[in-house]
Length: 348
Image (cartoon, rainbow, N blue to C red; front, side, top):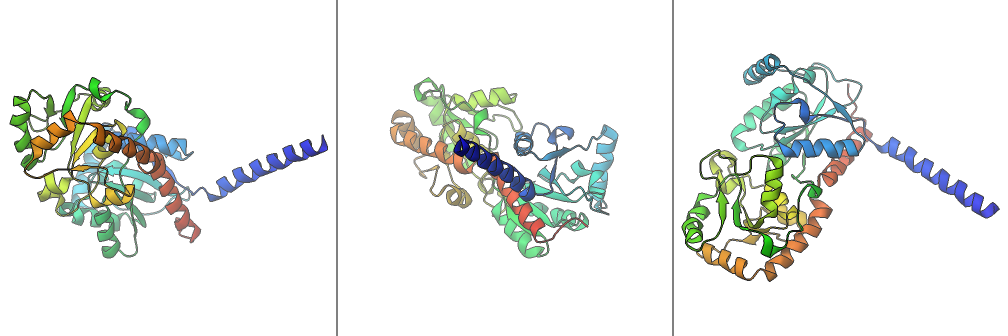
């Protein structure tokens, strides 16, 4: 009996110490809720919110009326928004889709921000540079590794970290069998015209169901539920990096985006091109690379003999659960912020 009581007491003490250690190591960090900005349709931001909440991070709100949002956009264009002091409550993590400085006005004036920069392309580097300097940013995350490297060299006093995009796999429906999927080829969002023009007519003649943006800006699936169902119905998902589809904007910055992870979470075969950073993240190439000159024949082969590619699909799903979730990204964020604060880089 004494031994049992002693073990229970030891277990209770260990649990208490673990909770105390967690509190000691958790960084002083808050996050800006995406639901309080006009960009609520940006699913990754909402996924990050959920992962931050699950990690026990406190949320911050920045409610903006239409008038305030309009003024904030004007001030951002003029590049006159500045940070004047850093709250003792700790820094605020904020996801920024493209260059959306206006989202953090006015609370950026009296809070230190840690931005997560999506779509940070070379054509806007000068605006990002101005933002980082005016807001006195000391730590920034970038979804594109090449952009993180650029700012690490350009702003050596700011810590620049690569944080790849991800997804929440549990939102998707991967269980639909291959033979029950009625969408043969899905080209969601931007098209790589060089590839698209080679498969469009042959797929029509072969009576294959091929969904794509027929009019620029057209939304294939009207809402999130429709998007998830569309992926679940798809056999092949076409994915190319923006450096191929929009080189004028993205330049040579080749990065993995949300669509790759959505496709894996839905257990689609990904056909296109894998950015180098995706291959390094996964430890192998999870994409079926396009066979130049045999685009349609390659698709027909994948559709008629899916067994080899289905093995890749299963491997991708398992690896996604390990390295491609927003939980993994939030863990990385907390580790980096903890390191920074452990070095004494506290808000001034």
